[in-house]
Length: 279
Image 1 (spheres, one colour):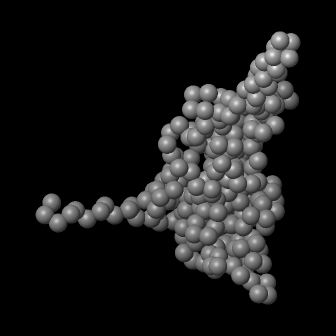
Image 2 (tube, rainbow, N blue to C red):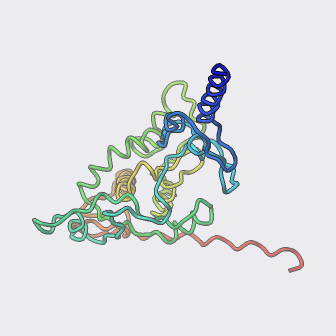
Image 3 (cartoon, rainbow, N blue to C red):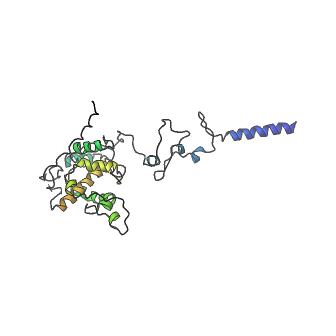
C-alpha cells in the first residue's frame, strides 16, 4: 500500500513538474523555467530578428514582415518627438543660440534635434513634392556648423561621393572595386540646381543602392551636412559659401552676411495620371 501511495505521489509530482515546462498554446502562455532567458525582452539591433523570438505567439495583425524589415533599428513612433527635444525651424543665429541655452546664464539647452517629424512617404511623387516644398535650410551658415559637418560628410557620404563631392569616393576608386553603381556627382550642375528637399529626402530614405541615414544623422546634422555639400559645390565653381557670404544661391542664409547668389527653380509638380480610355 505504501509503495502504491509513493508511486502515485511520484507520478503526481512528475506530472506537476512536467506541467511547469508546458509549451505555449493558442490561448495559453505556457510555462518555462526562467522564461526571459529563452525569450529575451531586449532587441539585438545588429542582427536579423523575427517576431516570434520576442513574443509568445504569431503576429496578431496578420502582416508578413521581411527579414530586412525586421532587422531595421527600432525607432520612435511616427509623428512623435521625445520629451525635451525641439522641432522648431530656426531662421537666425540668435534663435539657435537661445535653443542651445546661450542667451542667459541660467538657460536650459535643448538636446540636438534628432526627432523632427518628416511628413513624406518613400514614393517618387513625395520625393518631388519634398523638393518643391522643403526649400530653405532652417539653420544659418556658420563656420562651426561647417566644421562639425565635415567629419559627418566624410564618414557617411564621402566614402561614395568623394571628398570633393565629385562621385569619386574610395568605394569606387580603390583597385578591384565592386561597387554596383556610380555614386552621384554632387558638384554637377544638376545637383547644384537641385532643391534642398531632394537632398534631405535622400538622407531620410536613401536612393537606389544608397541607404537612408534617418537613424544615423540627427535633424540638425542632416542640414549641416547639406550646408557642407553646398560649400563643396561653391568651391568647385570658385564661389563663396561661408557664414559671411553665399554667392552660390540666394536660399541659404549666412549667419553674418547675405546670400547674393542666383535663385533655384522649383521642380515641376508630378504630372497627373492620364485618364483611362473612354473616361
